[in-house]
Every structure is written in structure tokens, then in C-alpha cells.
Image (cartoon, rainbow, N blue to C red; front, side):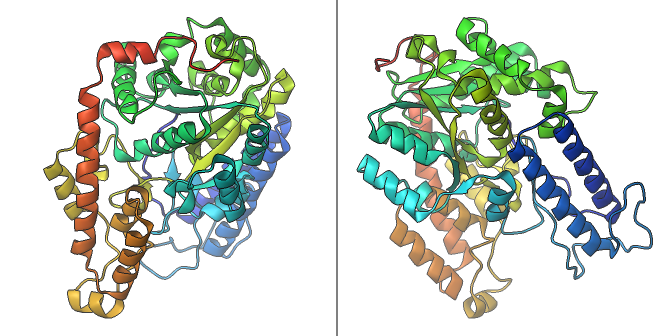
Length: 474
């Protein structure tokens, strides 16, 4: 699974906007030429039209191919401007100029997914007999593809399986990396289904300056953090691509089937690859797609090809699975269903994502209580006012306050969270007090994780990562 990279600048000059419109136009043409799916083309066209509107707002001129803008004043983030910068989301880059973060309603329209509404949440509660996870109740998982189909099958006593993953780009994971695993663990417990977790160490070798050995070592270290989340060894298979691909003929057969049905034009259009990218990157999406099909795991599902897959992931991973869903019926498989989460913001604000390469943008699972306190107090972007007097009078803005955003992820008590929101918005609660609540929430959570991780032995990792039958009969 790909990692985020923070944007260096979320503002765009008219010339940069012109180049983005041009590039998006070329992408639309290549998708059409490559006979991409209607969903893929529609999403690309919507983005193109939106970029053209942004360009006209910025320059006062209609976009004309081959005619860069003239007579313009550069757009400044400091001065007043009517420009609505488009959010940019792909598997490697997430950027927005909005302090509130990405506009997820627009993203649903652009990606062609469906909103997780109250009706769906109520149905999940009815089917499972359990209170919906606070990630569902609070819109942290906000979008889906075919979740109703999964519930239909489940109600008819037809099982499914879960698939999620992690791109091991560093030894230490940060708290944002826990989000899909916390939610996946809940799904596994309430539905009682098998889970496969892919560690894309091959991807990190191809994209980063890592040796094969180092990428694999990161995968093993990350597996320890994942196991420490409390997954059941009898129901969970964790695998490294570098290890499993050579051991499973079922997995590799699916990889080549997928590769045969995706053209170079399509993969360039979907992922933005260029002629100078190595062929490893170009062929990689099929490897992330393959776990969506039950026949990739014959030791778990025998020769069954009709066990549907449900994938909880951040929405930046959706391009991989739009491609997968397009290919699935052409190779005789069921389309995977998806549950999409919002992004976990960097400490500096929701315009950027937490990055494993920037220690000050993230709270790491290896951080000491003192480091957690210092990072939050020093770096967490505040929605409070400049002085106590102003804050008491006008209140704080929870929509941009990072400490409040983090509490929506990690404070499970709905009533307490709502009271803090009201108190902060009214000015009764100060920024320092809100940060203190976050510090006191995260310190024990991370300390408990560290204790559990200490108990994970190399032998346990080996057991989780050994291809084997799980506690289900298919």
C-alpha cells in the first residue's frame, strides 16, 4: 500500500495551473485510447473540467491548448483570491490548500464511490448486532463501494474475507498508520471472517532508495506493530510480497491475469507513470490487486474463486482498486468491495499528511511520553485565537484544530468529545487545555501498544506469516 508524501506547496501559479490542465487533458485522452472503464474516464473528465474552472478564475482567460497564460498576477496565499484550489489525491501525494483538509464530498463525486450514510451504518448494526465503531459514527470511514452487497451475502450466510495492507517505508510506524488496522480488527471481530494483510516491501524497494534486504526488514518490523494491534493468529495471514510471491503459484497466476488485462496506457492514465519510470513500478499495481481474489490464497480458501473481498483503506488507495474492479469480471472474479477512510492529518495541519520521513509531522509508535507531549505542545496546529482574551470571546475553530481532529480518532467517548467541542468553540476551553486532553489520551494508548509489541517474538511473526489454513472451512 502506497504511503503519502507531503506537498511542498499547495498554491499554484497560473502557469502551473495551465500545465496541470494540459497534463489532465493528456490523461483523459490516454484513458480513452486505452479503453479504460467508464468510471475511470468520468472521474478524469470531472477533474479536467474542475481544473479549467480554477484556471479561468485565476487568470480571467479560458484555457487554450498550446497557449500559456499571459498578463497575469501570480496567485498569493496571502492576498484575497477567489481561487478554489482543487484537492490533489493519488496513492503517493495528497495535497489541499484548505486548512480544514480535503473536501471528501467532492472526492466521492470525483472517484464515483458512495457515501457511508446513516442508513448503511444502521444496517451494519442490525446485521452484526454490535454498536458501530466510532470511526463509522464519526465519518472517519466515510465512503464505500458495494458494502451493501457484502451485507446481503453475509445475511444469506455467505462468508467474505478482509484484505488490508501497509507499505513498509520505515522501521517505525506512526499513529496514522494504525487507523486501518484498528478498524479492520473491529470488522474481523464483529463479522468473524478471515483477514489477509499485505506488506508491499517490493513496492518500497521500487519507489524508495532501499535495498531489497532493508525493505524486507522493515516489513518484518512493521508486522510486529500490526500484530500488536491484537489480531487473532488463527484468523489472520500476514505476508510480505518479496516472500509470498515466490511461494504461491495461485497468487502469481492472478498477478499475470491482471497484468494481461491492463494496458500501459491505462496504467499511465490511472497512476501518472511516465516513460522514464522503471517497469517494476508499471507492473506493481497488479500485485496490490491480486489479494482481492480468494484464489490468491489456496491454503485458506482451497480452490474457491467466489469468496468476496472487503478492503478497508484510506481513499488515496482507491485508484488501485478501481483498476481491480474493472479487471475482475473480465477474468471471472467478483469485484472487491471497499470502505474508505479520511486522511490522518500532520501535526502542522490538515493540508498535509503525516509523513514517516518527517519526525515532527508525526507521533510515532516508538515515541516516549515526553516526546509525545513536546510534539503536541510545540507542533500541533491550533484553531484557537492569538490571545486568551480573544479566545474566551470568540472561541476556537475545531474544524482546523489538529488536537481536536486527533481526538475524533482516538477518544472513544462520544459525550466527552461533544462537550469538549462545545467548550472549545465557546471559548471556555483553551488550546493548551485541549492539547493536554490529547496528550493524556495518546500517552497511555502508545505506552500500551509498546508493551504489547515487546511481547511479539520472531517466532510469532513467523507463525503469522506462514501460509496455512486458518480457522475457517471453505
